[in-house]
Length: 416
Image 1 (cartoon, rainbow, N blue to C red):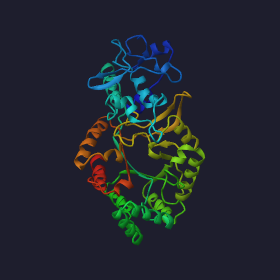
Image 2: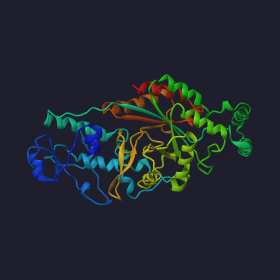
Image 3: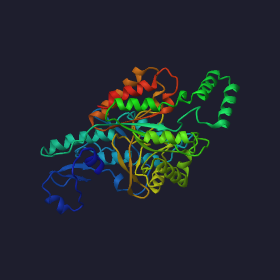
């Protein structure tokens, strides 16, 4: 209720369970019960918010004037569904607690989600529901005032591999050359040799250009998340001890927010997570409070418990790598609620709507823009936060879509 009424709609909210206090109150008021009391706005409650733990819930999705919703509430209710239970179901990631088959990386598959199955993954439905609810409230209580929030755009650069050829060390470079020859990848071998001669030709080294792009768009909020981890099967970035790599991170930190892109190993072991956080903090001489998990691998509620234990305040991993849309049904940051512990946790979750790897299936830049325009319009209407995640790796790939130019266009188009 604080999320929907307070953080999204900007309303001041008070709560009471005492009938006498409720009846005495002369300002606009809502009952969230099974039956109305007086002439207040009545929202018939589903049982979900009064339960303990996780239960297998049957969900029937219905239509509310063109917008999907669920937890039908009946004719007497001021809304055709229980907006609070439905919002809680999506924001808490209730469905990710339920038994499901994980993908090859141990993640919750988007195809399993209610949003994907009922085709509303591309809609920030919690925010849309909230603003429609506001219209109902103001019709009932014309004197009601709320504080309007402002649309925001956030750009994230995820750096899990800062260089593909440079700074790799003699052993890894020779191994890569042998692999290129064995697979007859002569073009790749040529690039590798060129980078040996001139390290700035590394395809992934586009940080100077990114700096120029960000300076062109004044006021843009851009965050860099660097992986700063030991070498492993899934984490193959430059050695954290290499001076040029360390200098790169420090130079980026001079003009942008730098935080931790946690490794796969850090996602599996708290001790490693704390070590990576401490090392990066020591390097840039600033506290590290923000995190992104490798491959957006958020295991609910385990990941958030680990991040809290490691003293992170904010997470930016809530989204799908290969699907556009709103994993938690919202474009508004929210505090994670741990259902097993029945407590709101202190970590704030910042959902993203766009991952660059979800755009690779499009063959033309115009197709990408058309798809993003649809999502942007919905976020803009509810004055939410349109967050996009790109990686320096994709910028360095040769594709039919010029990714770096596309990124520049996205900043100029959606940062308004």
